[in-house]
Image (cartoon, rainbow, N blue to C red; front, top):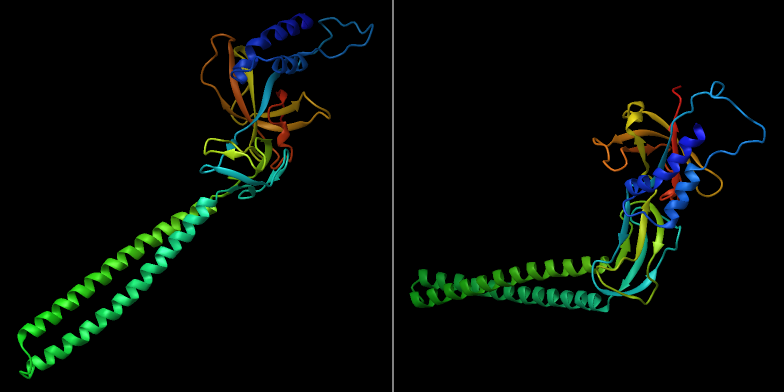
Length: 308
């Protein structure tokens, strides 16, 4: 009876894995499924009867994934000057991944800095001319009070002060604009350094130094180091065994040695898949930094962990 049930489970895996990993129909997925569902070896002559076999602990087929997986691309077009990481490297948050060689950005920074300096010098000169015009106006007003100059001379001096003051204000506005432009170009220069948005492992490296890239070209794939979870499917008749926070035992079924991890139920889908009659469940993997993000994508066998 148990052998027959496992045989049915092997047939159902073709529906189950696409449920866990949409688009997963290749031979590798089938290999994982066969490994998960393979019956345990039996010793010759170890015949048992249904009366002597205890009720087996429910086991569920799953896949270990990462909640933080991202393909990292540059902010703008250019040529890769340096790649600082290799496959499997651990990168801290903010750690350097690659440097984009974009001479035009450095040129823009130099030109913007020169334009800002020129505007500042022009404003300094305009301020000096304004101060001189204000001094002339003060002298004309003093002479006018003593009747030694005409009102036209005073009006002309006041007009010159207004012109010089407006010129200073115009140059001040230009300086603010050029300062903002310089800050933008400097930020772009900083963006030449491609960094990790979170702590993780390099799961793939797509380019090498010298490669031309655009803002849509991924440089590496980063998998989060602290965000692994397992997604598995449960028959509708067994959903009642699980609830949020339920303790689980998670064993990997690919690679050696086998890794056994603790976890707990995080989310349960609110509906049953119409094709497979299964319910998808997600469980958080406990233990902090596992230091083995290579587990992401590996098959897993999930079972209930006995309550302490």
